[in-house]
Image 1 (tube, rainbow, N blue to C red):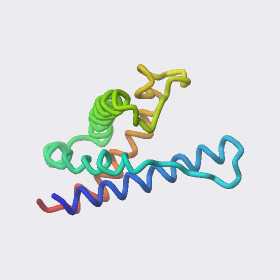
Image 2 (tube, rainbow, N blue to C red):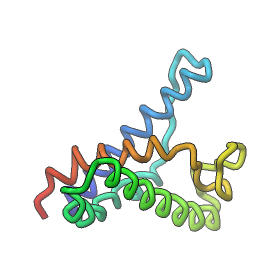
Image 3 (cartoon, one colour):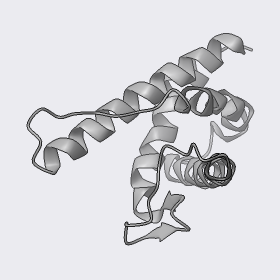
Length: 130
C-alpha cells in the first residue's frame, strides 16, 4: 500500500503540472508555467485508498466508474479544502470561478476529475496487488 501511495502522489503531481501548464498556455503564457504544492502529494497519494472501490467496480461500465470517481474526488477536494483553508495553507481557491462551491471545488472540473479517476485506475489500481 505504501508503494501505491507514492505512485498515486507522483502521478497526481504529474497530472497537476500538465493541467496547470496547459491552462497557462490557454491563457497566453507560451512558457506553459505550471504550479503545484508539496501539500498536494499526500492528498494525491491517498487516491490509493480508492483501490478497494476499483476492485468492486471493475466490471461496471466506464461512465459509471468515472462518475463515481468524480463524486469521491469532489468529496475529498472539499473536505481537504475546508481543513487546509482553516489552517491557512490551502493551495487552491476557486472563488473567482463561475461554477465553484464555496471556493473549494469547481463543478466544471468534473470531466477532468472523471479522466483523472480513470487514469489512476489504469496506471495504479490495476497494477497494485495489495
